[in-house]
Image 1 (tube, rainbow, N blue to C red):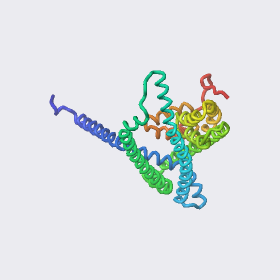
Image 2: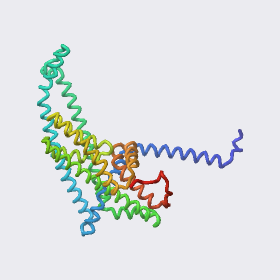
Image 3: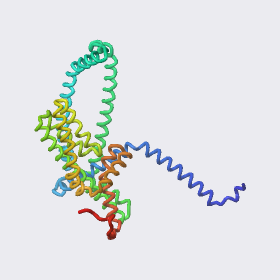
Image 4: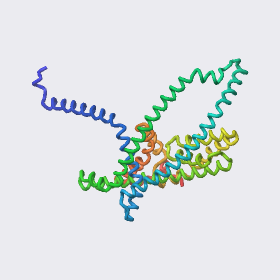
Length: 352
């Protein structure tokens, strides 16, 4: 084949394709390396959108934005520290009580196995002397891993808090810098999207907080009535987890009080389980639809699919960010798409 007969446009097209493929591969490689950074940035914007309405109100009353942001940080720190202190105290108490019951539990298991199967399990002292070194090594490895994870968590948290602080405290200047890169018409669209994102994110957190308070209060009152220990901490845990952990939060939040209630008494455990199941049905059918509809304005199926998509892309963080992002996209699309009157049909009739 005579290469001189190949059209110049074909050779140029081949080079364009090679360049596009090479660039795509490079971008994909960079994106895969920057996944953690992109997740951190997403968390920072989510927190900034959630904090900004309160900062704007305080700023309108004469507060400096930096001081208003620090005040919100301080209040959040006190709330989290109080909850962690109460929950940590309960957890340590339960672990100590469990450790005290291990010898008696092992003796009961030894007796059951011996009487049922004729198998004699070793004495506790024999187990300790035989597996002591292995246990110490396992504990040491676990401690090193825990310390490493804790330090990484602290560093990541400080990064998120610092970036979020500047996004909020210096928000107007940051937005001016971003808007200066676009024509004025595009600037208005960008600011409209930004405002919708702030509104939907703050509304999402408000709605979740309301559900957490209602669920936590109801659970605490019930646990007090049936005299389950640490009712306040368990109720707070149930409310927070069920409200803020997407999809499976309902089950995770109710699991701990049910287990601890069963540890006290089977009757208390059955009662707690029945209450958790009954309350979730009442919340899902009456409370949550009203609160979420006003805050997010999302269809239930869209909300569920958004959570699944966010979880598939970014894991638990994506599931948390999915709902406010979906609400923002819906509001933005609804603003710029022209809607027409819907024809009356059996498929479009809405129940009242």
